[in-house]
Length: 126
Image (cartoon, rainbow, N blue to C red; front, side, top):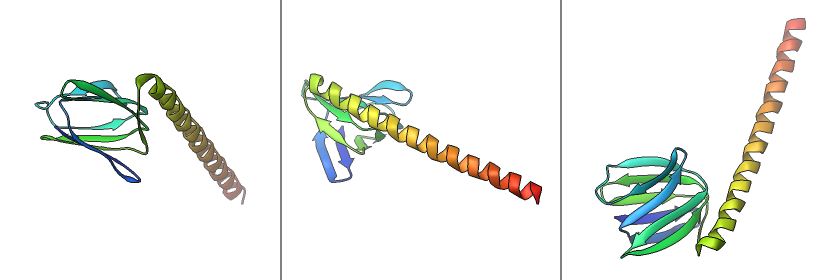
């Protein structure tokens, strides 16, 4: 399979691989060359690919994966290559960032909802 990983800065990785293991919103999965085509949302976590029997590991900050035929394309906000021990720390940092972003989004929605309710109450009293 031809794996390409894109990050906002450009092309991060372009390599032929034998196997891919990733983490989606539905859990971990593995892709081999003859698997069916798939599109999946990725969560912050470890991404592993095998080239000629040798495993390589990345920390991905979420994103999207699309496999069509022999081509696998991954788009992510950030990718870091390294050893498993180092990447665990990086994945935890990415998950913390995602959690903080979720908290900020929930807070903004709560403020919008409160403003909407206040406006409705004001309109009803007129």
